[in-house]
Length: 426
Image (cartoon, rainbow, N blue to C red; front, side, top):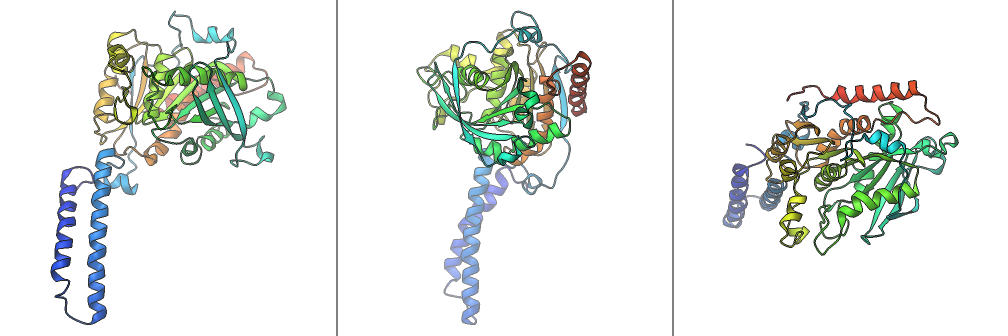
């Protein structure tokens, strides 16, 4: 009997009803020593409690699709995912603005621009000791404020070891914006999904240049689920996440304009794909782990659009691919064959992928098993982060670059991305 679906729910529901009836019926009819009767009664009570808890757990799991099979629940299936390419093939495709000029040329002469957001570092956390900042880096707490949106959001910032070395004092680093699901927490990005630890390990293994990671909740105005959207008569979450946050970090830290990535899970995954598509001149690429493809109006999000069809369309990635010019952007999306939710499941992912066309490119990772949970995302993150590092195509950080070293590191980053695409298809 499968973990998901109706049969297991029916069996557990029947057991949850029958066990109390049987318990009441036989309670006074039990014979034998007093200790034995007491043990049997206790066992029946425990069995009834366990069955009821199991029924609730299965109902919740069916709703959220956290675990899609028994092997997923117990972590016994290690079947590799299928990785496919959609749209423009090749990881070395040039990035362009809407006007067609390459982002690389634009960024070369770009400044950090007019300040539209402000970031205040609140102090280092206990992620590393002060004596380890040049070997392990630091995670600092921060408060980011949008000057126009008036949104204020707490975040954690990972600064790599190179950031603190004197010879890199004038070096600007690539940056990655990391967004949790809803309701989510920035702490889970540091501790459970371990972005700082993974980033450090990638640099030590020469799979990535040193990068700054800015980690925060996807909702910019909790407890409301803002869906990374400029809400009609409400919080301007997209303005904050896709503009003011970028400006705040670039004015506070040594970050290279135009060398940003964005990554998230669940709601954060939708946000990552949406921000990357809406701002291709800012983000080198976006990673969506079990994300979806249109803003979820209603419920915890409230009334996002106030009846505006234009706003609804602007926040539906599939509608945009059908009716607007396709952005020159790269995405990395994940889903699972057993994830059948009407929102973020496999069918919705495939509908989105079949709309992708050049110049957009998408690397799709489809898992045989794996639900909407941290275990799945922890398994997917290493390859996703390597893909992101390759997309940003930043050379290994050095105080001075020469043409040969830049080309060598760029080539190595491209090879790293190509290595994870094992089964390409149209």
